[in-house]
Image (cartoon, rainbow, N blue to C red; front, side, top):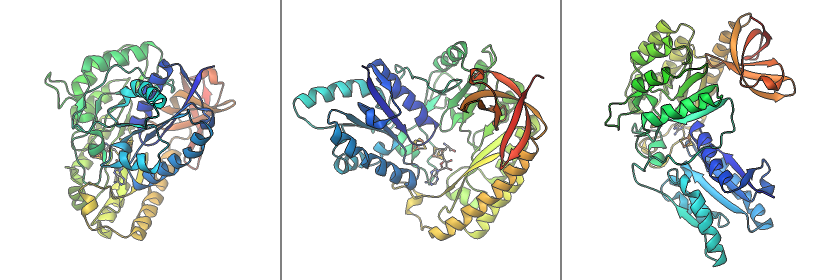
Length: 443
Ligand code: SAH
Ligand code: SF4
Ligand code: F3S
């Protein structure tokens, strides 16, 4: 019988895709996937530390593994991902959870095979755990790990790793190192072969896709990369995340607008609507530049689905600053926005600033969510009666399908799961609490 693996992923899309790479390594070693932790011979936690809540949740989850290890001592427990890269955290995990066997940093995932083999040798000699963290600023880009993809018809493709921006609140540059861009030829080849293999939606991943290539000497940048991806034949959708308002350019917006395969959808996190807060956050743009970008996007793509990340309660944020955020949200009319309460992260600039009481943050986030919900609801109403092309992505239940429009809106409709991976036309009939429901039509 096959040995079984179980992977639990916390955090962003980047981590979801890295878990596919971990799965690739384990499948090569002869493991098969299980969704039941208790059955697994190896349990991997791919962690996130973007906010305190994420971190607390993971600590709780690792704690629960103690009993599983007690039941089966041969079980291998592996902790990887952003959390392990925080200053001193690998040692904290090792001490607090002595049953953890292997801890790997964000740039060392490719070492998993050799670390498992090393662990087996150590166990024979009754030696302890393995910690492998790479703290160099620019770890090498690893190309020899083939992901085991589990999300057909969607596929993720890294175009770059790390971040150079040091937004004052953010831990990512500390745990993921500086920007490293992959070779354009390798990205293009990967997308081409995914399309050939039948994948219908490719999402390019990077913390700031617009600065792709800034570390390269061959002149490649995000625009030139997109112009090459534009040449790939076949019907598929291309999305990317995340765009940064300081770097997104008009030429990129124009290229998206004129390329049928590039989705009418831009995730453009604003974080805050007040210039004073944006400055303190070190975001390097102001609200005027942001409005200019929104106007430019809408000029070329009037029905573009624009989404955002917005934070409340950054140190020093006054009620007036917060009103600026509400005002910006009202003016932009996001299809959707991910809203967060600012959470101080050790080692970042903002963690040392004077903090705002939690009650104020709570109050602000509920007002922000109420406003955005209202906007999402109104914009959802506008979809009713329209026929949209939808990529069938999943079948959550028998005879129930879901998929997204080009602009990124999720639609539910009935149909057989054999349609997964196909483009269908859906007439949207109902907007139920901002969830769109429709029916396949032959138009
Ligand atoms: N690179 C992306 C986002 C990475 S993190 C970008 O620049 O937009 C995803 C989101 O988490 C951020 O957009 C931000 O809104 C939120 N976030 C990051 N650090 C945070 C913190 N300390 N507290 C609360 N939210 C945070
Ligand atoms: Fe964090 Fe800013 Fe980099 Fe995004 S751009 S990952 S928010 S430092
Ligand atoms: Fe992503 Fe969390 Fe790391 S949001 S980059 S997994 S800290």
